[in-house]
Length: 418
Image: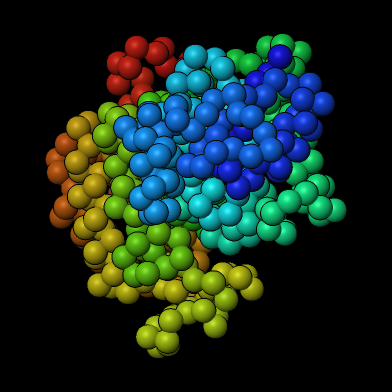
């Protein structure tokens, strides 16, 4: 029988957690309730009390409660809960985790959720789930459900929302029990490749994905929207990927210029730090991403724009910006110990950067390419092609380069057959 962990502050949300436990048990799962508040639990008796959670953070509940610093208390209990949840998963005592809360509860519970690997069911019912959830979700697969009403008692609305959440968790936690009925082909583990994609690099990535699958790999495609790049980097650092095909490095442009899809300074470092073979290109570095036109900062009024859709406005990167993007790319890829290659498509880095298209700017592209040429060390293979990034032959070149790097990496795992 699957075991679902309920983690939360039972001093303020006891009635709601009691309701969740009732629905989960009725759904046929075992439930372990963990109290992570600093005051005594109400309306429900936890299976693991708050003293144990605090102890794992090197603290005492009475001290945290008496200090009157709610932020410090939430931070300490979050660290203790994360340690406990990680241990429970490693010991096979957790098949899924469910929590609910406002800003403090969401921060606490999702910190513990992020301790779990991708694939372990994680569901957070939250009052802040309709806004920017990046600080809570991070680079893992936490599902956020908006509570609609505040989490303050069981009423007509909250009863249905919480029942839906419990039902979803029962389904997710029990899904592993059906794996034995799947065809063997669906269960076969293949070496995983992480690839990055944007709408303007989709033809290239689709070609690469098909070719890599034909070679025996499984391809995980990440949308290069900041969190997508971060997620791929996290999987690479965790050693879950056999290789990285980083075609779309547009997040570097948003990081530099201030767009809405930055991935931060860790972008382009995961594969290198883990010693994983990587092929990197410059897809969509011709653009910075913003929301609707009215959200674009006024300081960019004289720039070149393209309306990708009603919610996304693209801004062409300048010569100076492209030079700095190229410098950063070369520096980060160049730090990798081995098994890295950079591919430059000299006729355009996106669908709208080719001749005749709105972002076609040979001078800006040249600045990008020159900075990469100047900054890459000799240990990184540099390939230049008289093609645009979505040219099929260019895509095949990258696939075969990555495949042969993986085969020669000596990772201990047999490479797929050609």
